[in-house]
Image (cartoon, rainbow, N blue to C red; front, side):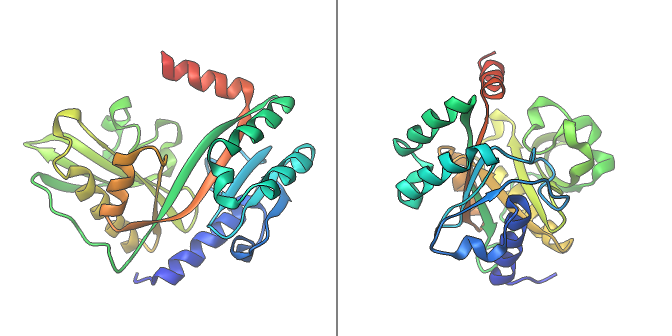
Length: 261
């Protein structure tokens, strides 16, 4: 299925509207918007809606989905600072301090990428690449391949591309059907095989295979994860939107405990 960049962008806007309980055009306004967060069966499957506080920006403004009790606090924040500063320190610390009054903390901050169809092409690899399907995934639901496949949401894993060195899996990119029209790509490469172009070869091939299914591939990375961002750009993905999400103090503390251990 051939898509234009504009069609891809409109699909992403509509998906964000489902996620944020707003209209697609709200993300293109020059004025910020605050809406009450609600569950939506069309939202990305992994979003624990409704949110207490979640900020999304495509660059022009911020759309904030909140709980009723957070509305005044978040309105104050997003209207006090410029859009781009609301997603970085030191300004984000001001929001964090206000959220602690409600027992919440800043949690996830990420940048999302959409494919540029004029830049996307399959990149070369020195290893054999194989397209894999759900019936092939079971041996790979391990920590090593945790970015490519999700053991907790196996039903969403639809397609993958593996790189094999004489039969040994050395790299894996998988796409998850996070919503009806868009599949998210994640990739892992064994440490001894990194910096050989495997990640970009897998990502670019999987993006192309995803398009063949009539779905829009998208990519997510923390903006501090330079290696991942470089991979996205090398494969023809371009920054599209950013998102900041608050979660309960207990949730954040548990995540930090797990990561330390």
